Image 1 (cartoon, rainbow, N blue to C red):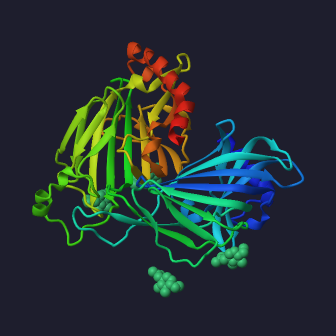
Image 2: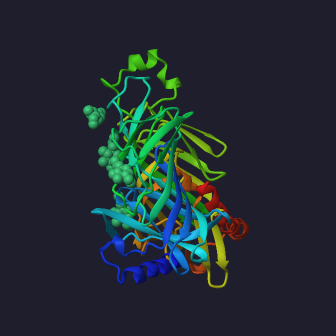
Image 3: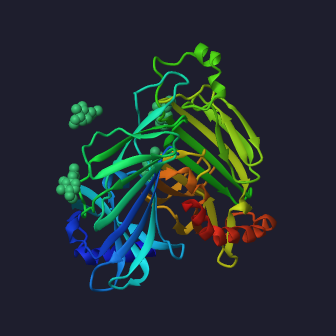
Length: 471
Ligand SMILES: *[C@@H]1O[C@H](CO)[C@@H](O)[C@H](O)[C@H]1NC(C)=O
Ligand SMILES: *[C@@H]1O[C@H](CO)[C@@H](O)[C@H](O)[C@H]1NC(C)=O
Ligand SMILES: *[C@@H]1O[C@H](CO)[C@@H](O)[C@H](O)[C@H]1NC(C)=O
Ligand SMILES: *[C@@H]1O[C@H](CO)[C@@H](O)[C@H](O)[C@H]1NC(C)=O
């Protein structure tokens, strides 16, 4: 929150006031990108990009902020954004200002402010790395596939970097597939690509100006895996001090964005080719990692019937009743219960305040989430003091929610509304600080006492957790 607001002010100063739209030319051109290298990784169902920048201050005054420009199409689907100082391997304060759109060369762009730890003197240079993770629309290349046929996907990206600054040297690598090819048909002799094993290495033979108009680079790559996207996840967490439990219930609206089957599904062909055993675009099972020592698991699908699942240590394996082919949808609900002490920390015994740390996700690996609501139901009579979420939220709402068993006002409900998430944020947690009076519950002193140590550890590891997300 603090970070965002200081950087927000930086941008306000730069452009005078925050307008709905501003000319990108109003941003200073104090830097030069001496070298700009993009690595685009297509191995997952979403796109991961790393941008390594060697930048030089070409102004006559010391500067602290670097403006990183993002095409609006990427911003709308962005899940993670981070900036690192390469020399120190440290994270840099950075923020994208969502309300502010810039216009550059007739196109809408968003600007992220990246703040250096100290100002950079004129003529000096430094190295930073930007990481972007975003949902990308990949079309099946030939529209549909035969059962078991190699799956080719089509992806369009920028040929040239969109930058606020001049770029002297630009290179790009595309990786993460056994086969990647360029299919765009541009007659641009200033840009070329060559194969380097399974990787594609591209470079510009000329320097590139700020916001240079860019023809899309169209690539086709092989990916014989399902593309799981959760169009909506309702994740509910029920806190009971009385039972000393935390109950989870999640409802997934899942869709497989892989290539659809040519001519539809034939069970006979599916059985004959033993396709269930082969890794391909269809989804036959879902594996999730649950918080340790979970109990009372259940798994139901749309008609409410109980479906097959297995729990092995902290892993739950769900088996849908039919394989989910490209374009198919699957709605299901899973639930489980954990001990409250794993998540609850008593902040102050006298003021009866608590801190609850709730894991953000437990869903399957390699999955993109378009929308999610994480709702935490606190015991009746709780007063929310503070909430904190490490990811950008669309909204946070505190309401009273009455259920059948509530006598008075009902449970206090905190809802975090989130867009554009990826499975790798599952190690992150939201924190809810609240007050809950002794008079409103029978305390279970032993189980709660044990929580202090565990939850403090969670705080302690938070910084480290962020590192593993980025790597
Ligand atoms: C590629 O460009 C050439 C000449 O500009 C044109 O004849 C050809 O049809 C184009 N191919 C595709 C696939 O767009
Ligand atoms: C290639 O670069 C030259 C010099 O910078 C420029 O004049 C020309 O328009 C560029 N070609 C294309 C296709 O962009
Ligand atoms: C899944 O649920 C959503 C809304 O919750 C609904 O619009 C959709 O039709 C459902 N899909 C299936 C396959 O039942
Ligand atoms: C998600 O939560 C927001 C905020 O509480 C609410 O307005 C919205 O209706 C919820 N969406 C669904 C599908 O429940």
